[in-house]
View 1 (cartoon, rainbow, N blue to C red):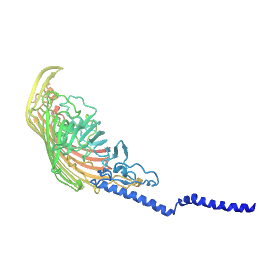
View 2 (tube, rainbow, N blue to C red):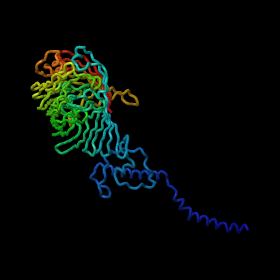
View 3 (spheres, one colour):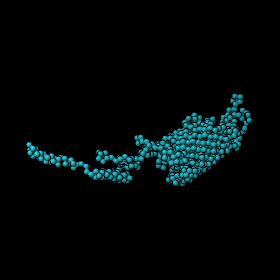
View 4 (cartoon, one colour):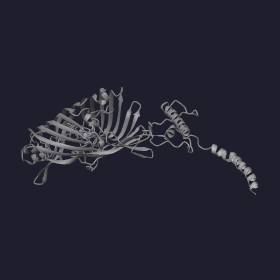
Length: 591
């Protein structure tokens, strides 16, 4: 038994060894080799993928190259950045081959991060501190924002001076501007601006001598649609548009260096700042020459609407030269001149063509449009010959320095005063005077000079060379206390001085009735008594500006105003030399 077992067992052992050699041996041969060798294989595969990506990037930099299929590769407009995501395991199933270079790169590279993206539109906080939306190819850009200016003012003024004004100068505060705005460009060459003001500020209540429309609670500023890059013509706009009568008129109220523009501008240009019309503007010879033409309907400044039996219109022409523009806009010189040829709308009281208001208001203002007094008001003037305005401007920026000079003139030819005056005695009309006096030619004029300097290193006041006007000040360093690892900064500081002069006066001829008589009282109430109309003034302004960042600005202005004031033409007061001191502050925020 034991012999049989030993004899039969040996063949079984040999059979098991054979089965193992045939079946299990190959499986052992398939086990992993040296792990170092395997890692080397993986690295070689990854290097091959990186080489392929490098070729794709080279194709992106050279659009003329073609891909493997012989077709031109699509080039991304976004500079790729390295993705921190790990590369995918080479042993995993390969993803479907993308069609474009941008998609291929996106496996391991990503575009610069954007705050918001929705359906191809990006939202960013621009360098100017405004919320900006734009699509991926940059053909459509839209900005939303606005600004508010909170002003306060104080006066040192005598009772005698206040008696010359239509209402006294009183300390107070107001929202000088409170605006909302949307502007942008769509499909590369179509532009729009929609801007309105809710402040009911001092200069919004102009032209009451020719405007019987209700004063709106909302004042429209720029509300227009335009087409850009038209061959030779440049930009054509249609809507409620600012009349660029000077460098100061073309500049936004958010960018002016003092709390108010010059007094001559206030009298001569401000009544015509916005109107309904069409403009054409362009630059030539590498922005050396700028031209602007405008055709407007008069008497549409405040509400962007009017009705009038007299279809009066305006033609404006502005020409500017920019002989110096260097150092990325830190060194520049602009010289400009403007002419405006205007028909006059019919007046309310007599239905005759009437020159729009030429009143002058103080350089520091408090209260709403019905609370700010006039320093000078020449009263109503009639003419059939229209009105002509002329301005000449010189503005210079040189590093931290900026200088500006401006002259304004207004010509009224063959002016006259005409009014039907009812003479009343004891409550009864005893006579009606068809009173008319020929005044002749009238010329209003004024000028201003200003000089400013930034105290902080690197800050400057820029110019828009495609539409000569002040640019927004962007401080080199924002106000910062060093929180969250940010560098400390004090913002931008600027000091300035401005002198401006305005002469808005003429003499109304005629014969003075006996004082106290019914005829005298009637002519006095109608502002028909002969004598001096209007007056002249000089204003000396010292300013300090603190730009905390692109959004926030703090202003302080001290102004001494002197001259012969007369804002009560109906009383035929004899103007006399007087003056007053004023101090104002402004807190402005743009968003």
